Structures are given as structure tokens and as C-alpha cells.
Length: 227
Length: 227
DNA sequence: CGCTAGCTTGAGCGCTATCAACGCCTGTGG
DNA sequence: CCACAGGCGTTGATAGCGCTCAAGCTAGCG
Image (cartoon, rainbow over all chains, first blue to last red; front, side, top):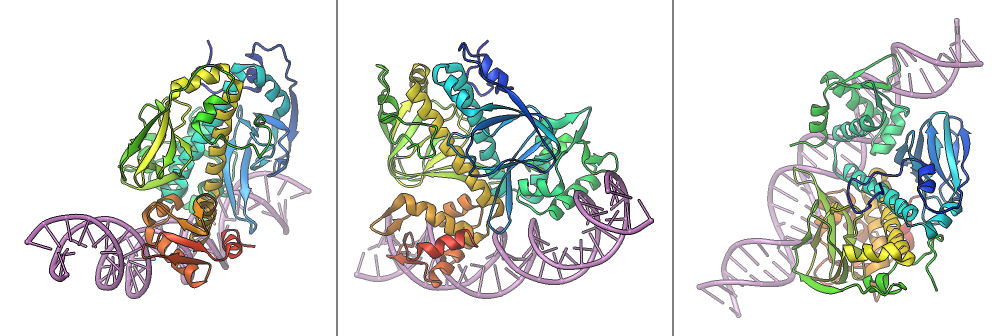
């Protein structure tokens, strides 16, 4: 079955290999792997975008910095996510490993070469870009118009869809990362989480505070988008 | 000369006609025109995205609403801008005419049909989507991390690039529209503009306050991005 | 075992929102 | 031609949400 980009439910290509190999093209895309230690940079803003990446294991943050150090994280990339796909020749974010991370990577140029002749690959590229755009559009609404509690609730629901295993969310990122993703300070994020805990909406597991159980998704959703 | 999407300076296709006609395809894309009165809706969020639009004259705002009325404007579309290009089947924003507006429109399906066989058109679609993505990414930084003065300064500089004629910016949108674009209230926008006026950075022309002269672009830029 | 990084919590402050009053311009109808 | 209403913008007073500064706690690690 072929992906139809004309529907909202079009699945995004879920691996770099898929991107290249569903193609009828005979061109082979070379895949390699690379590992980054916690905190190290995968690429920097304005650097030439020579590679496209997929998280094999670990987690990555993409962010922009202002000259005085204010940081806005645009996205978190978790296992399976593809990132670093730019259309121009330069990266528009800095990407950093949040924890020890292994990525697969392909040369961007080889991808473009295939896309040139292969409609399926080209459509997948457009589809991925559109998914990124949609995420950014939703995030603008959050950043521009939501309260701190709504932002944190929305964050938990988003992560729930992506990292929950056996009912427990294991967050790789720190409070500061969450804060810079949500346009808040780490203290405000911490207070919101405490409040959700008091309300019985979430629970913590273990002594690190990064394992969270969603006890009441319905109430969480109503906090995200109030009646 | 063909557009190369591999460069940052790739010009965006600047008309719907271009999108269809630079193509080697023999398929004809039917162009029609339609006019909207000030304040009327071009399309609503979640409506099927059957057409793609280009502003012939006037101005359009694209926004999302929360259930309690909070509004986030994602973009302003001015003369020449193409909007309503969704990759899914539904619009993700509501689009409204800010002033009396005339648009050109094409059926989305016909565009997709051409893109199917025509690499140039397909690349232009990707290029336009990427431009929208880049704008959204920059706007996330603004909404998440900039002060009110920085936001207004950034807004003026952005509009300056797009609507300035003979040194005067004629803004079609109200203070409330600007506020909902910048994630502020209209009072805060008004105060920021007054402050910029006091500082001698901008001037007003006429008795409507929508004609603005940038007296000191350099200072404005330094207010947008402080050292 | 002490040190550091990360998280929580408290106290106080400041920026932006809220509420309100007012002015100006425009359109409308007497 | 004038009176009036409504839309839009500005400005002031006050409030409140989230930020800043600070202290203290815990876990992990050398």
C-alpha cells in the first residue's frame, strides 16, 4: 500500500531506510550510525545541513538561542524520530543529545538525488515537512496563548503519546528543557507539576522525578483545553 | 533558470500561475478570482482544504481559536502571498479577510495532479511549505522568549520588508490583530508603539495610526535582538 | 563522604493583563 | 449641518501570573 499524502491520516515514514527503500529507484542510500554523549552537539544552527538523522536510541533537543542566552526548544526528538531535515543548505536549530544517543544518518544529497526521480520519496519528504509545520503551528498557539498549567498539561499529553510504556512516562529531559520548550521557567514547570500531583492527576515513581504516571488523562486534557 | 531547493536563497514561487506554468506539463490549471468583504471568512479551521489561494489585493489573517475565545494569529497574508496550502485534507487555520480582499484560487487537487508528474511543481510545493515552517520556527522563539518591546520591534521589521512603500508602512491590521499575532494584548502593543514613538524610532502619519514610518531601523533591530 | 546537579518550595517583584476612562474619526440619520 | 453612536486607539490605575532570587533537599558520583 502506498502512502497517500492527500489524507490527514497519512502515516509518516518511520525510518530513514523506509524513506529510501520503498522507492522503486535502484539508487542505494548509505546508512551509517553515530553516537553522541549526553550534552554533546549533533549540529549547530547555521551549520551546513549535510546529513539527515534518525534517533536510534536516546533523545535530542532542537533549539534556538538569543544572544543573551534565552533559549527556545522547538522540538524533542525521541526514538524513531527523523530530524535535521532542512530544505535550505543550513540548519535552523542547534541539535544536542539530551542523554547518550545513537543516531542513524544519511547524506542529505543522496536523499535529494533519489527524490529527484522518485515521487514516493519526494512525497515523503513533503509529508515530513508538513508534520513538522503542523507541530510548530500548534506550538505557536501554546506559546502565545496558553497559561502555564495548560502548557504543562499539553506537554504531558504530548509526551504520553510518545514515550509511555507500561503506563509510565520516562522523561529524558530536565525541568529546564521542559521550561525552554514551553516558554516558561523551570520553577514554574516544577510548580505546575506539583500542583498536578496535589490534584491527583499525575503520580511520580522512583526517586528521580522523571518517571511520571498519568492518573487521570481526562482531567489532564480538560486542563489543557478548558471548557 | 530553474529553482534549486538545495540553496537557502531559493526564491519562493511568487504566483499561483508560476506554480503551474513553469511546469513542462501540458496540464492547465484553472485560475479563478473571488472577493471577500472586510471581516468575512475565506475558510474555517477543520474545513476541507479544496482550494489554494493567492492574495491579489487586500490582506488576510490566519488564526486558531481556543474554546474560550483566545486567539493566536499564525500569519498575515499580504498581496502576492499564497495561503491555504495544506498537505492534509483539512485547513489547520481559519482565514479571514482583514480588509476587502480579492484572491486568486486554484483547486488543490489539480495542483496535486500536476505535482504528481512534474518535479518542478513538486519542489515548489515543498519549498513553500519549508518557508512556512521557517516562519513558524522563528515565531516560536518570539512567542516563547521575547519581551513585548522585542516582539513589536520584530513585527515592525517584518512588516517593513513586506508592505513599505515610499518609506511608509501602511498596516492593514488593527492593534488587536497585531496583539493576537504577537501573543500580547492590544494595550501592550499600543504602549510599545507609543514607547517606540517617544524614543524617536518610529513616526506616525495621518490621523489613523496605521501608517508608520521607521525612522531608525538600526535601533529597531537592536531592540528586537538586544546585545 | 563530601560535592555537584537537579528539583522543590518560599518570598517578593515586575511585566503584562485587566479594567476603565477618554479622545478621535467615521458614518448615519435627523 | 449637526448630533450621536460605534469602532479604534491611547493612557492610567490596579491586579495577578509567572519570573527572580534564595534556601534546602535528594540522589548520584567521584
